[in-house]
Image (cartoon, rainbow, N blue to C red):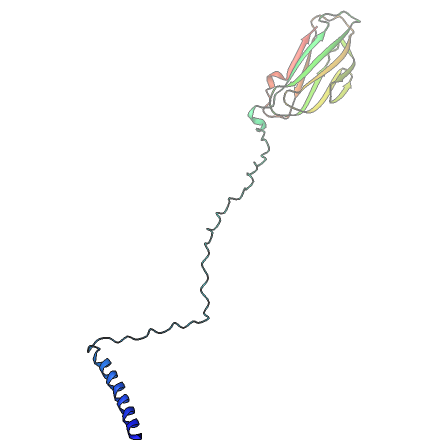
Length: 202
């Protein structure tokens, strides 16, 4: 009985070996054998950050610079020898005729006809003998009376400035056609001397 059982086990083992051999024999020679694919290994490596779009650099705005200020250039005056200062003298008398004992008024008008200052202007009127000077006055300046000589110191005169001088006198003697002449002097070299003398006849 034991012998029979051993025989049966041996036969079963041979059958399994035979089946395995048949299975191997059924695979064609050179045919690839299926190999299990390796399983992916999961690691804790962080994913790289997604790049963010960068804004282009801002275009610099031009600086609002203040406009340049004009340089203040003082006006220049032409030199005196360029004919720009011209003090002129004109003389008149009121009334035009007079008798002994009458009072007359000599009017002297000084005008700077140039466009530059006239310097050191002085007017002198030597009233002749048939008259006696009673007094003198001027719009400005220093008035000096010595006997019948009247001197008015005006100094500087601006362009177009006008100064009026008045001399009061009395007729003391009959003398027809008496001339009274006044003169003007100035240190301005460009002065026109032809208009610096003026007179009247009474």
